[in-house]
Length: 109
Image (cartoon, rainbow, N blue to C red):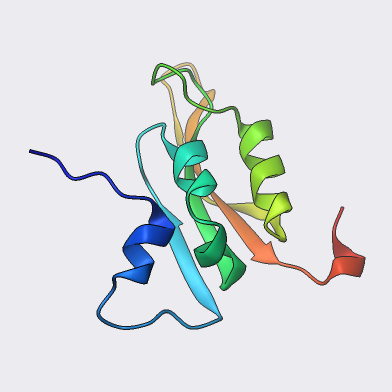
């Protein structure tokens, strides 16, 4: 049996309380949008987030890069670049580790 929970539900039951200034790393195989949707309280405490983002359609129903940028922006985290990216044999980028940073309201685009 697999237990399902939201990111916020998991954090609420964590042994150690999460504190502001978190670094959140997501590598959830195409479920990024759903984890983000269930993690408003966690993302409110995040100073930075790294998302593994698939640019190719690797998973049914996966969110687009643009959608994930908008979702992160809604949590006050702006796209700041990539840590790494993986290439297909033809040279196009298949997936990347996108970095999002907490920005002041005036700096948000």
